[in-house]
Amino acid sequence: MAVPELHPLLRDRRSTRQYDPTHELDDGVLVQLLEAARWSPSAGNSQPWAFLVARRGDEAHDKLVGTLSRGNTSWVPTASAVLISLFRAGADEDPTFAYSDYAAYDLGQAVAHLTVQAQASGLSVHQFAGFDHARVAELFAVPPAWQVTTGIAIGLHQPREEESRPRVRREIGEFAFSGTFGTPFTP
Ligand SMILES: Cc1cc2nc3c(=O)[nH]c(=O)nc-3n(C[C@H](O)[C@H](O)[C@H](O)COP(=O)(O)O)c2cc1C
Image (tube, rainbow, N blue to C red; front, side, top):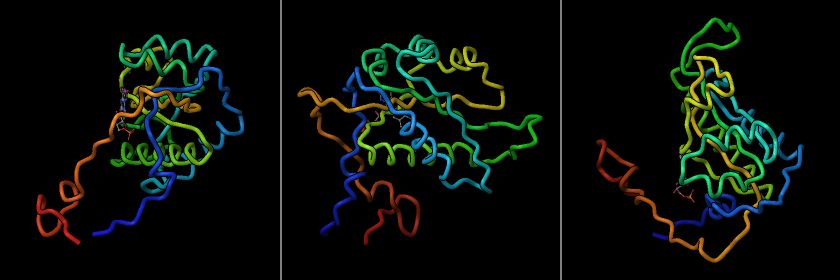
């Protein structure tokens, strides 16, 4: 079956490890990325996400770089900015937030929207889990109701030859089902 090609914003997205280490992220563009997250849908419009914002060279960035796992130290610091994503995992005294069972889902979707906006703005996003979450919570005084989740490196992709690894994915029939769970969907 001929599958129509994806939109270029999705087709061309990659989690690069090769950032231009001199690129500075414009304030307006950074806010635009947060706007993309802000306008994503969420259960009951609960908007249960938060982001710690750090830019290469500032104090928050220095703190974050110190928490990276070994595999991420070579490339995360070269990105122009790093966000740490959080979702509201529990209830507390704050009356502005209603507890939602879908908070993790909503955060993921907000980050997906941010990622697509970054791609549209000519930037590359690479999400990462390899950092010391507990240490970040401590360093940034994160309240207990909030779950530190992923890092989001944002910057200008600087292509070099060694990054042409083939990309692999499960087939659609392995994750889209019809009838009963596990029965591959066939169009
Ligand atoms: C929640 C999450 C955690 C990830 N953690 C890391 C990480 O710690 N280090 C890393 O290099 N990439 C990390 N990645 C990137 C994935 O490895 C990458 O998205 C996947 O291999 C698919 O490649 P692509 O994004 O280029 O299509 C993570 C991605 C996600 C969504």
